[in-house]
Image 1: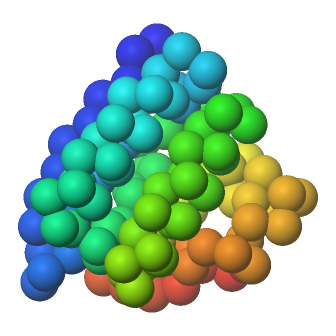
Image 2: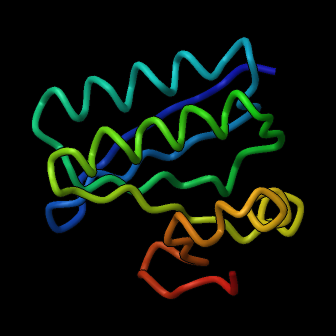
Length: 112
């Protein structure tokens, strides 16, 4: 399975919709996308994980790395995720306390 990425701007926030699997093979593509957004001055980023079918530790590392990049510019990297199996990964790893996780693009928060 491949990784698909699409970006759009909403009220000064860049939303990156991710689809497919984020694993050791595809995670560099997401990392490069986040890096180029930050390099272009986008420091408010939301990663939409609704179409993600699989997320491994490499993918988690890319998300944490992206969070560090935007925070160094006083920015934010938040997630949209409603899938229980992905939310469970964030809870087990303690990352549900690190990331703001929304359950819809309008900004409502998912239970963390």
